[in-house]
Length: 191
Ligand code: SF4
Image (cartoon, rainbow, N blue to C red; front, side, top):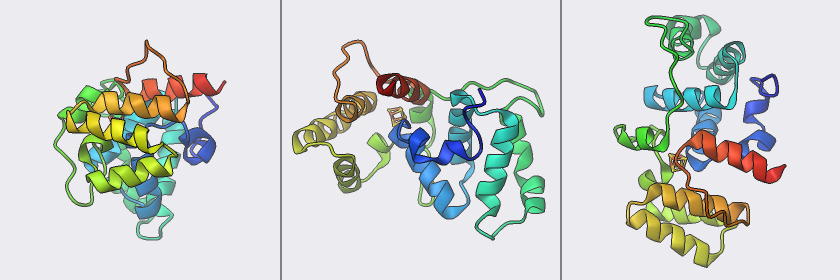
C-alpha cells in the first residue's frame, strides 16, 4: 500500500480517520519527538495495520525521534531501530505481530505521567475528555452520552458513539473493537 508514507501518515487528511487513541499518540510523538515503550508499540502496530511498510515506518520513526534535535540518527539506530524492525517481524523471534485491538490496549498497564498509550475514553481525566469531544464538534447531548458510557466502563461503546457523531451516522452494525477497524470504517464513510 504505497498510499501511506512516512510523510502522509501524519497529515490531517490521514489522521482525521484515526480513533482518539492513535491521534493522541501521533500528536504527542510529533510534539515530544519521543514516545515511551507502550506508546511506541501501540502506534507502531496501528500504523503497520493501516498498511505502512517497514521501510516507510523506519523512516517515519527516525524522523519523528530525531527532528526535535534531541537525538541523532546514530543514537536512534542504536537504541530504537531494532524495536521497530522487531515489530515488523524482522528481528528476534520474527513473529508477525498483529495490530492491537481495543481489548489488548485496555489490558495493558494504564499510562502513567508522560505516557500516552491506552484508551482515552478510560484514561483521560473527565475534564480533558469533555474538552476534547467539544473540539471534535460533538453537541452537549452527544458529549453527555459518551461520558455516560465511559462512567459505565463501556469504553468501546463510547468510541463507537464518537465515531457516529463525527461521521453523522448511526450504523447499527458498527461496534468499534479495534483502532484499525475505526480507521477503515472512517475512510469508507468518507469515500
Ligand atoms: Fe482506541 Fe479502541 Fe479506545 Fe477507540 S475504544 S480509542 S479504538 S482503544
